[in-house]
Image 1 (cartoon, rainbow, N blue to C red):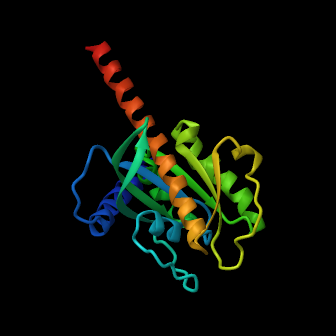
Image 2: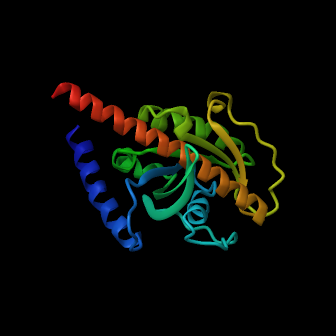
Image 3: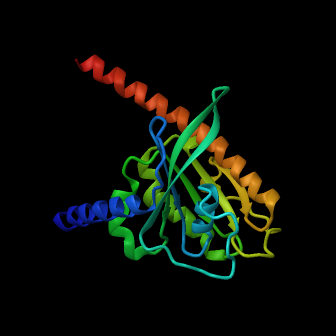
Length: 219
């Protein structure tokens, strides 16, 4: 236990330093939504994170750069929440799929508001992998189903036609077939993300209200 706690503290400090280097200067509007992008290695998580945060508009499909631990990207999205357009600050946590960083997961998971699980349906082992990722990490967060999303993502050019049904154990979550291979599919992914953020924002507000009411009841 002592080793685990020490590892989490070290990772927390390292993640804060990474966040300070990657976050642009921007005025924060309300609480930022912390969204994790998780899944096995080489399924396209980093390119998805770059696209959704407007960090990279033209992905390089030829080069693969492994994520070291986690990257934290900040963005501001205009979303619809209960019929109103609002500006939502977002922290997108692009999480490595390498198990050697598992000691950092307690710090990564802490206070997450939403999760996007990503897997490549053209790699047979990844369907089972994403079920294990859900069981090991997402399930324990106790998030409402509306705050978890599944991308069956085709990371390579030329595989956009892959038909993928989500694993049965994950079928209760919103599922989106995604690719960055053309503008239409990229736009569909962005729209799906914004809709997902609207649900996350509602969940955040409901949780905050419940916590406030519980605090007042104890006073």
